[in-house]
Image (cartoon, rainbow, N blue to C red):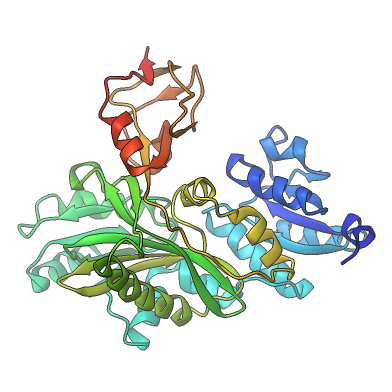
Length: 399
């Protein structure tokens, strides 16, 4: 593609929030012009884009109609979203299908967004996943729990962002009614998934699907704040497959199952993130999505993998390079407030780690109930992150 044709082609981004800015910059760096759709006239992407249209990313019909109309005068070569909400993902698939652009299909995105469909796909291809029940009836959930005679996880069947609506139910059924209602309130379709709790180490397998072939970029052990705080994620530690034979064997085992899960969902030309638990040497798949796990894009960037340029090349059909995975021992730790109040940042620059703030001075912060409550995060070599988090350095105050 010559420079002249590049200057006449546009990449569309559905959503202009902070998480999409690196993708906009990557598209511009590759010579494309950008079009951003977002209802917020003051969103960060509005100023950076070449064209901006005030359209809600929650309105699928309007997004599709407007984008197809815009394409009549502005040749579009790629469409993407990095929003975890259902509507922009559905709209992206529909637009790409209409314009003949690389993307995940509408059927595969439904397999991802509907957890019952997802688990059915896993079961169809004999991929181990926890026993589950889809229901909107509290009594059925209680009966299923009693039949399993084990701890269970309650969560929304669709629409839940991060860990919203997710809770652990003990064997004695304590709190099941309130937790069922909480999951139902967070569900976009009013249904709840209740599944057997799998005890073991949890890993996130993150990568990219080129055509229909999955490629792993990183495997990270996931950390969370525990069941008392709704399993809100607290960070990641990368698994270095080259550190020893045990790591290499574990990596290969996890990767094989994760790739099977991606293929079972029918994903093509997309990112992916598979959540798995390793219990007694057996890999159990919990979920799989079409975005990277929370802030894994920042972890990859720190590790020297430019996921932003990689993805822009994928959606424009120009990706030609081989895929490399993270080979460093990298940690990411989220920063949370312990009480409600107004944020005052004290430290924000360190030589040995990357410290990024999600919130800014003067923002109201509160103890976490989901990952959206994170104040910021620290990324660095494992020993450096540990040194900072275990130090007495005060990163912020709550007024």
